[in-house]
Length: 43
Figure (cartoon, rainbow, N blue to C red):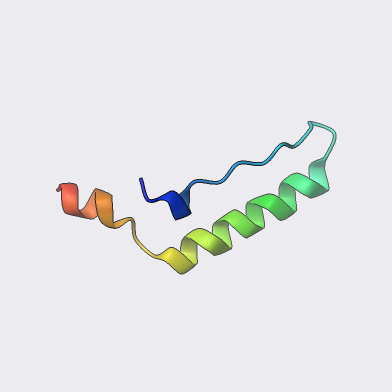
């Protein structure tokens, strides 16, 4: 896996807004990267 595609965050179950913002950022970052080349090349 490309290192840019791996992210971690410590979020408590009581931190709904933080989870929401973190997921938005993850989705934006992955969309910027485009398709996963390693999966495509493995085919």
